Length: 378
Image 1 (tube, rainbow, N blue to C red):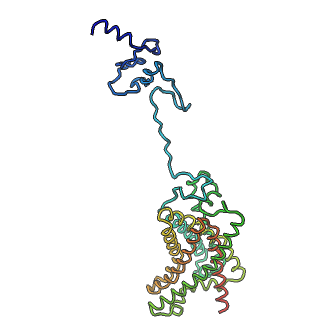
Image 2: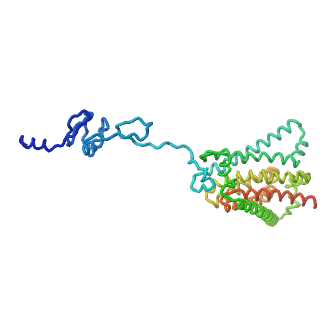
Image 3: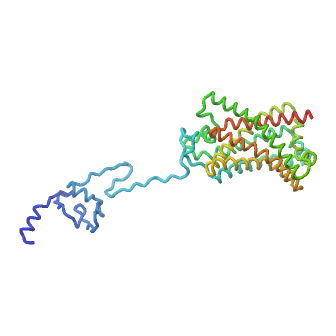
């Protein structure tokens, strides 16, 4: 290339002004025109590796790109900034307006759904056992202890320990809520009137009362059919051979008076039904339905509910395997049946506990009242 061609090339080059006022050529640069750092030979290199100057913008617009600081708490930099999302620990929080409809939210899994209720059950029994140990230590009289345990007023007193069934899940679910107030915690567990009009609350109460009567009939029929099946299979008379299996229950009911019967019925409705349904349906079944599906969530909850309620029967007849098996089935199958009914109602009522709590509490009260009348008449 002769001198004339070189001169023509220089004349065609457009100039730009850097920070220090020096001319910049619109050709490929070997060095950054701002900081002077050598530019590596990389195709489509946008930023200077030294000072972060936008080389493409500089070539196109002939001025340095204006700096913008989006977050005032971030120190301004010429280097390209990559956004790093904050790390969020734990489950996604549920806002107040979505508490009664958590279909799209991740809740507690299978392990927590089973483990938390079992832990609450063990804690309740630990406290009850502590009271019994104190009575033994104070009196050293086993006969007195037996009389206390069969006293209906002791049953009323010990029923208050079931409030643990409310306390434990209420504490646990706080981490799933944006606003973990007591009202919101109970709402997440289904014990709420949120989203239900006054007429709707009355409807839930009537549904609960109706299914309480259905539950009594259901358990009566299931118990009768279970007895017939077991008598046929084992060739024995259930009433005559195993009558002692329910002796403690009979003793409590026979020793009850009208006042204790009324108080026991109130406790069944306000404490037993409420606490057990919050724990087993509101917490356990709700979690298992998310992890195992609706059908298996209901079945597994009913199975665990029934197993927990027959532990006392199993412990009373450990010395006779056949009696143990028959006593277990006589108690387990009716409990399983009523628990399936309660689980189905909970699912039908869109995971609201109002009708379920009424059903459970009134069912227990009716069972005690009917047993009291039966034993005192016959």
